[in-house]
Length: 336
Image (cartoon, rainbow, N blue to C red):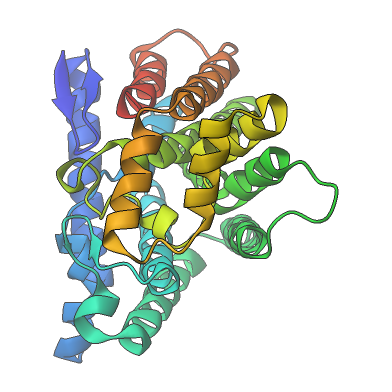
């Protein structure tokens, strides 16, 4: 059993390990090439997060999905580069919206160069992704465009909040399906599609990616509360400080509605207050870390990871399928 990639997936088969390692290395080269510009400053800004590393979760999924067809097909690596460039672009924009100071263990682009440069760099990455995508054919362009629309819609829904009468948790799951699940679904779809896999396999891996993407984001919600900066690569409690209700907070509010316990109400009131004060923020983080709502959010992560695992049932038994199952376990492990 060998661990491959920053995400830490365990691969049992040497041939599969070699394919995955080679694929991820090729993607890394593609990312560096795609982020070069004739203007040195643009290259520096565009490569800022590429060189900071990251889990490369989406390229890993593309590489594994391609094992169900021809993993060496010419469109596999470029499609993985497209998905990762799109993801990186959203991080530049997210950090501006969140006023984040740290990303992947390094200063965020907005804290280093300002919001305008960060937004424009994200736009530059979108443009480069589109340029590569154009060579992959009109179907790939359509798939990416639909996913990007869903991604932006999810982000807008998160900003707008649930409409009157809508269950906040149901609303939040729609947000996660859009802003995270959609692009990870594309990773599974592109890997299978570009490798020439059967349409049934393409559909399975698309559904798997969507469900795993939701589990992945739920794990991130838990990490934002439970981890330190070294584990998550960003400042803990960023969403709390910005007043963004992630799953642990939503589970706390649900518990308040259901049980009405004084200590839950007090914590909920604290979370709803101005957490720009470092002391109040630290108190809120510490209290939420030991609250049952965080454990419920962990159980939500497990449930969606199990759904993703169940989606794989129609696929033939092989080392690639075993690795995809392992990926579900890795996502759960991240949430503790």
